[in-house]
Image (cartoon, rainbow over all chains, first blue to last red; front, side, top):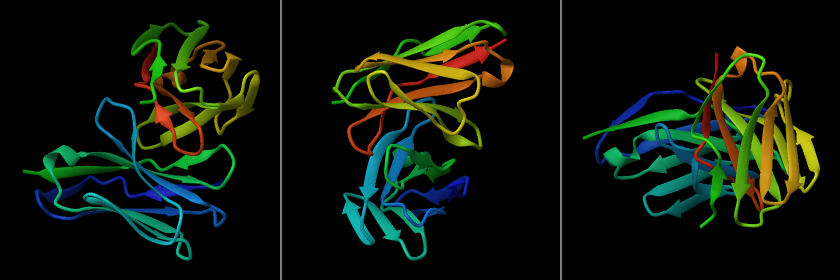
Length: 110
Length: 110
């Protein structure tokens, strides 16, 4: 059974701090990695994707991928209360199926 | 922007009823998916379809069936609803691996 593991949280950070969200996956053949944000009562929305080892930056968000360690993370710089949401890690090992983690709840305190 | 529309936001049905959940996307995506989301379990794939009239079982297909007669429409059918099918149901479509989700249907089976 292919798995994607995330700490369920909640992760609480003060406004302006860096929030670090982590994810591990079991399938070494995984090729594509995604971070979705889901506000309470809303559907998930894609915020970042990464395919290659290393860092990928988009505004205040940085995705980090380490395939050797089967580890992907999301850093949110200058965290804002509006970043409070559940963050879902998703992994695709090819084909049509993407496996989602259960999500990490993030609270940013004003 | 991709628009994925689910027919109902909230639905209440009785045990044993046949339930239809409808999903329509307007971006001509080939791939469509049905997930259910439960607390602590994350998103679990029920069925997906990569073309009209084509369907593949996901991780938890038992008790469900699907229909895709037209490219833009993907229907989830609960053959005989049971209380353990009370959940949030999310439809998604994708061109490659990046999924775009509908707003979800919160289904309660009494």
